[in-house]
Image 1 (tube, protein in one colour):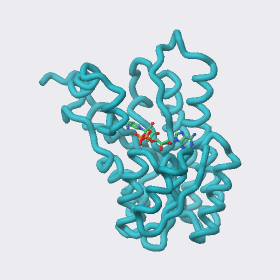
Image 2 (cartoon, helix red, strand yellow; image 1 turned 45 degrees about the vertical axis):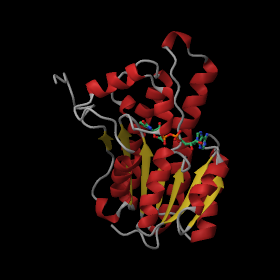
Image 3 (cartoon, helix red, strand yellow; image 1 turned 45 degrees about the horizontal axis):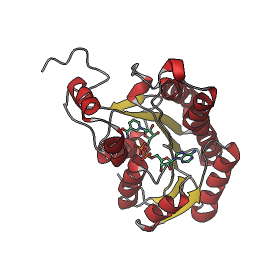
Image 4 (cartoon, protein in one colour; image 1 turned 60 degrees about the horizontal axis):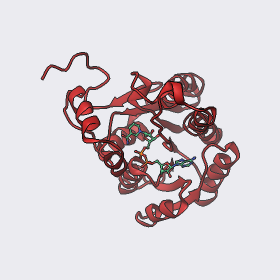
Length: 249
Ligand SMILES: NC(=O)c1ccc[n+]([C@@H]2O[C@H](COP(=O)([O-])OP(=O)(O)OC[C@H]3O[C@@H](n4cnc5c(N)ncnc54)[C@H](O)[C@@H]3O)[C@@H](O)[C@H]2O)c1
């Protein structure tokens, strides 16, 4: 897979999965826009690869998403790939979630993804080529305690993926999503108790967490020209978690 001459925007590009994807796309020749609310961290990722700029983005703002796409076009001439990856997670039971928490997660994880993909698609239609990829989660498929707005947002992304594929497929743009299971990141290690970690491991047929590089590999495939006939799907990258019923061993 070759991405020379192509430009990818990665929202949340300073984080674990975004930066791993940035590294893989950069190795394959892509120009990158590392867009993140944490612009210092985004700049550090941009500096670590051959051809990239950082962009300060709060993805819950439609205007900032449009400005980010404009910046990519100004610097590199086009946008071929848009990875809507920025996201936040909360862990609060249904009975305790505040309106503010609910809105905040939906604004960033669902509305923000739509604003970014819409802005990028408006550029992509001009040349009749594009790859939109949304970072969903296994929480979109399965009920998991404490994740109500997060799950609603990710399930919403899966529906949006199908709908946008129908509208944009005829214009040469594919729209797909990747749904990671738990990934072994610094944040996950800091936030999860050993007990919670073991529960996940017991329910995943692979009996382990994934790596950022394994998620990046799926994203990079969907971002490639080779994936032209894959459209409107959410691909779990989860060691078999979504497909599993009882895991006996
Ligand atoms: N890590 C996992 O186990 C896992 C599993 C399933 C899905 N995901 C999804 O993958 C995506 C990336 O997760 P990650 O593990 O790399 O998390 P992370 O926290 O390492 O990275 C998220 C990035 O998004 C940025 N961000 C947060 N709010 C933002 C906003 N309003 N505007 C722009 N940027 C913002 C953060 O600064 C951070 O750099 C998220 O959408 C997450 O829901 C992660």
